[in-house]
Amino acid sequence: MPGIASPATGSYTGAHSPRLSAARRLNKRAFRQRERAFLAEGPQAVAEAFHCGARVTDLFVTVPARSRRHDLVAAIAAAGIPVHIISGEVMDELAQTVTPQGLLAVCGFVDVPLAEIIARSQPRLVALLANVRDPGNAGTVLRTADAAGAHAVVFADASVDPYNGKCVRASAGSLFHLPVVAGARLEDVVVTLREAGLRIVAADGRAGRPLDDPEVQARLAGPTAWMFGNEAWGLPPELVALADEPVAVPIYGRAESLNLAAAAAVCLYASARVQRVQSDGEAGKSVAGQDAT
Image (cartoon, rainbow, N blue to C red; front, side, top):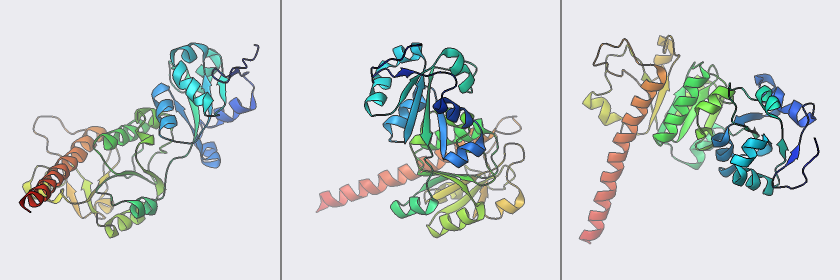
C-alpha cells in the first residue's frame, strides 16, 4: 500500500514491520518485563494513556478506527508519536480481543515504588492484591479502587501482571489514573504501609468481625490498606496473620459468597464513605471555627 505523508493520519505499516513485530512480542510477559512496555488496547485505554501523560511510543490504528477517532489520532500524531496504519487482519493478530476496536498503543510501564508514593503523599486508602491471579478480577479491582478514590493499588509479587492485556482492558483506563505498585514482596509492603500509618485490614470471609460492625466502621475512618486474596481460596492464615484485623463482608441472603471484585467494591467503598464523612465533618468544624472568629 502507498504511504500516507500527513502526520495527522499516519502511514501504512506492513505486516512484517520491525515496529509491529516488537509490539507483537509485548503480548508475552517476559518481553514486557524486558522492554518495560505494554499494549493498551481500545479507544478508552489509548485516550487515557495519552491524556494522563503516560509514555506512549507508538500507535497502531485501522483506517475505520482512524476515521471514528480522528481527533484522538490527530492529537497523538501532533505530539510526535508515530502513528501506524494497519489492516484489520493485522489488528486482529496484534490485539487480544475477539472484536478489536482498531486502536492499540505501545506504552511504557507506569508503576512506581511504594516508597515514592508514601514520600509524595499521605495515602489513606490502598488496595493490596495478594495472590490475585485472574487478570479480569485484578483490573476490575483497580477500576473500583480508582472510583472509590483510593490513593494506590499494590500488586504483590504473587499476583497477576498488571500489564496483562485483559487486566489493562478491565481497568478501563484506571491503570493510568492512580499510582500502581507492581511485584513488591507482600511482607515488605505490609511493613512499609504500617510504618506510614495505615492499618492493614484483611478481607476474609471466615473472619468473626463483619464489615457492618460499628467498631469496624469506626476504625475504617483512619488510613486503611485492604488486603484481598486469591479468587478461589481467599487469604491463607499466614497472610491473614500479617494484617491488623480480618473483616468479613456480611452475607444477608443465601449466596455462598461474593466474588473478589464485588467484595473489593464493598470494602473499598465502606472505607471511602467513612473517610469522606469524617473529612466533611472536620471541614465543617473548621469553617464553623472561622465563622466564630
